[in-house]
Image 1 (cartoon, rainbow, N blue to C red):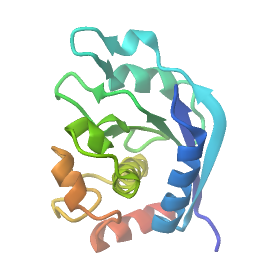
Image 2: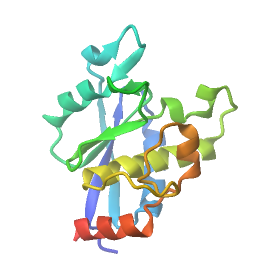
Image 3: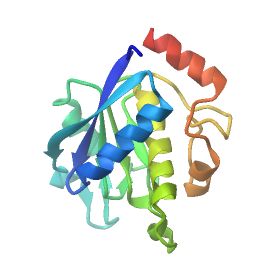
Image 4: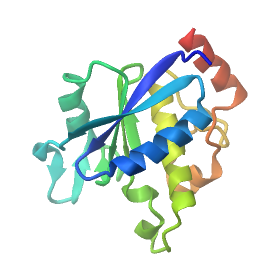
Length: 179
């Protein structure tokens, strides 16, 4: 198969490279026309992104910092809890269109909600959020179909409900953007 593009998965701080390898394999199953590569480079989170009152990291600050440095399509993956000033939290953010996206694993982990850890469940959530943000980098917008991966997730139940894939309409748009 000829790949139409490639995306680099890059760890922010303490995300394990082994996890990124597993995530890249799952992403290649989900979007087989995109090559996913794991960067061995480990980036750090800008300290000025931390909000001591919220005990969260401002995603806008992180995105602004790395958007100047990133020159290839990149998904930053972090363990820290992210927010933007207008929302209580976010699962991820992306330049749309652009080269940079970020996802947080913090609220995708079942333990965040007091549940037992389930690796498959956790990975499914990470794949959904990664696909969602990567599709934003190609210019896809939010979709009104709650089963579409491009549907906006207000909470973890929305993420759990949706598919890992774009709906037919969003998939056609994505394929056209990749031509």
